[in-house]
Image (cartoon, rainbow, N blue to C red):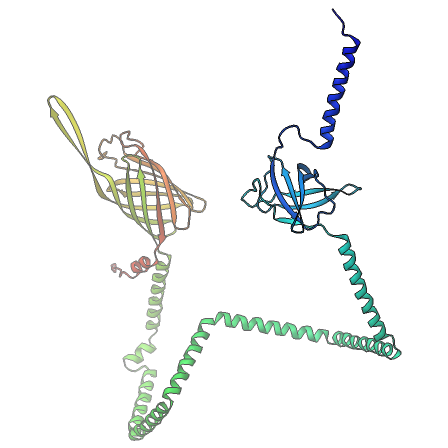
Length: 491
């Protein structure tokens, strides 16, 4: 293999060195090899404090661009900065000049902001944080120092004389004596002052409580007094004249009927003596103890009737369920009469979308076609229920047929799991088994509940799910209406 000559090796080495020097020259000089990347933004400062071109731009301490050019425009320094393409700045972005390191190297710091729209190429950063000028600060401090010196001289001139010093000393001694006297007075009367303040606080609290409890009567009284004073103002003279006239007529009538009034008083006295001696019908009633016993028994009967009415509770329920089969809604209206906490009666009306099903069979050209006609029907429910703690058993009429059911209550009666079975004679269309329903009711609010479950689970033809909602509330008017119904006396 032919070896390279010495001249060729020297030339190659020189070429490599020249390439490296060229690269370093461009790198140190800040020249770009390719087209510059990023977008241009502008910022104006009153004083850039020695900031130079090619100075780095930093965002959160990370390099994000450079200062392209610095211009003088209308007495201000106009910076042309190039920001990296991947940096997003917003309309409330801010720019300021910062210093880093012990030598005080300066750089341009930008805060991105957060308020849209985003800044685009050629936009200006309006939020500029100016550099504090040390010379101006020193001049301001010099002015403050001069003012302090003037104030000190004025105080010295005012208080420097022997008379001023003596007067100031006496004032301080007087203030000391006054504070000592106040301290002694407060110490002597501390208990009395505390007691007085406590009494005042109690009085204010009592008055406030009294006014709060009687706010409405006081308001009505003030209103009545206002109306009464207005009436007196407009009708006062006539009212006084009428009162005088009525008093005069009453006096004349008493004078004319004095003998009659005297005889009536004597008659009343005789009647009272007769009753107290037990004579006559009223006298016997007053003296006879059987009347007292009868009244006591009547009062006890009234108390029992009132207690029964108070215990009697009435609930009204409206409910609507959507049945997946036959894809229709079913409505319920119930009245629950609860004479005791563990016993109640349920009366209801049900709007059944499959209340009546008529099947018609027709044969045409040997082809048999069955057609069902489904009609809505109103059905009735009347059940007696007995509760045992969290469980209850029901029996009676369910949707116009005999039925039975059970409930289990959860979460202080906020939720209820129910099982109902009826139609044991299989009267429903296509039913080979009784109609059974299992569901859960849950009160999402005090009077509003949601319902979900499975319906007609024993009959495949009508089996399906349901979901619904309802409203249940207690009605006081119905309770008292039923409490006033007269009872038929028994023998």
